Amino acid sequence: MATATVPVVYTLAEGRPVQDPTTQTVLRGTPLQGAGLALLADTQLIETLAHFPRERIPDRVVHAKAAGAWGEFEVTHDVTSITSANFLSKVGKKTKVLMRISTVAGDKGSSDTVRDVRGWAMKFFTDEGNYDIVGNDIPVFFIRDPIKFPSLNRSHQKHPQTNVPDSTMFWDFHNNNPEGTHCLMHLFGQRGVPASLRHINGYGVHTFKFGKPEDGTFRYVKIHFKPDAGITTLDATEAVRLAGEEPDYHVKDLYNAIEKGDYPTWTMYIQVMDPKDAETYRWNIFDATKIWPHEDYPLQPVGKLTLNKNPENYFADVEQAAFSPSTMVPGIGPSADIMLQARMFSYPDAARYRVGPNYQQLPCNRAKYVYSPFQRNGPATINGNYGSDPFYVRSSFKSMKTTGPTHVAHDEWVNAKVEVYTSGAEEEDFEQARDLWDIFLKQGVDQIFVDNVAGHMKSALPGVQTRAIEIFAKVRPEIGERIENKLKGLNGEPDHVRGPYGLQVAMGGGY
Ligand code: HEM
Image (cartoon, rainbow, N blue to C red):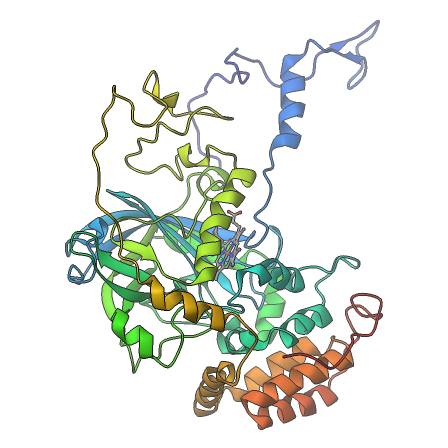
């Protein structure tokens, strides 16, 4: 039943009150419905039609489909010995948060229950500026060289000729960039399709620095969020059914849970490493394809995240939101991971294009306190533009309070290491994948993994299948054999019968 509301005066965008929106026409003789001449002077008609095709802004080039919500973060454990970040300064301190959880490869209208990584983007509105964690629900990533990022994503998206996702293209990319095998095993494991966004993990993935600018100390940190209600997943058949029948299944689930007051919560943990240990640790801690096993660096609780408010308006609150790994606060800094550093460029760059150069002024992105008078003018300036304040540095008319450094460098050793580790895949790239396989075996979910991979790979060209089988055999020979056997029983028509480039893929070479 419609709720009765007090009538309001509708206006044009410039405020002129309007009657019922109908088109004005010039008629001769008997009035006819829908006939006559439309008027250039009918501002209401012109304004209405002209605004409509301008309703869209560019979709995010990745992570276009998402759910969003507002929430709150509360510190539950003292971490002041590790960082002086103000929002973590006291047990009980609460900070407003904006959250966006996305799929990666699909378009904005794509289905939720697909096998894909889930993006985990959060913005903390702290007293010392915004802090963004732009992570994923999988603890590792597919690549460690940022120049591969566009290629990785294109191979997961639509083929340039057929405009459909293409299994050959997908596996061909991974076959030739096998440093992502560990990440692929997470994706094709049981957790590859969540049952609900309320029941997924969130990971910062990269190594960050948490430190104390005042005394120059810092530690390396990995960030984890774990759902207090546990992880739940969908089996492949149910996921496919929902993808067809309920394409917005996850978005709806999160919205309705919050609307009903059933607020999802997560515990934030960190793993903390002394910089000295990093130099001798067996894994390169700046390589985003690697975890730090919990036995080596246990999870330490930090606080609790609660999502408790739906967006008032999806476009205003979520579509225009812009998250970036470069959005950091004093006490938290980047590490020598070159992926992280490349991302620090890429996200604000994308936001300037997607939302506009003044995107930080919009309510969904605006920090609590901003005084940045060296950035002036530009399209849609809505912050008053700092009036007559000086717009040049070192003005005598507005003095600046200075702040100290925000983190300590640890770079000499780092430069040499990073160079070595950005090359091709090594034997050690399969070790953690092997450990994950052993976990699958112990948990009895190994067949699920084999079925998922074979189910996806069945539509790839045979040569690409063979290469992928060889790579999984490097994890354990039995994985390769089992995938190969499973494929024999499946009939798959290639997504693109001539191969992605109209050629059979050249075999050989590799890493
Ligand atoms: C979105 C670039 C790696 C998580 C995006 C966007 C770009 C991008 C351009 C769209 C941003 C926008 O339009 O607002 C890159 C590059 C990467 C990289 C260049 C590597 C060099 C990663 C990694 C993670 C990640 C490793 C996870 C740890 C996300 C998330 C979003 C996103 C969660 C969606 C943000 C939102 O909700 O607005 N990425 N990305 N990306 N990326 Fe990355």
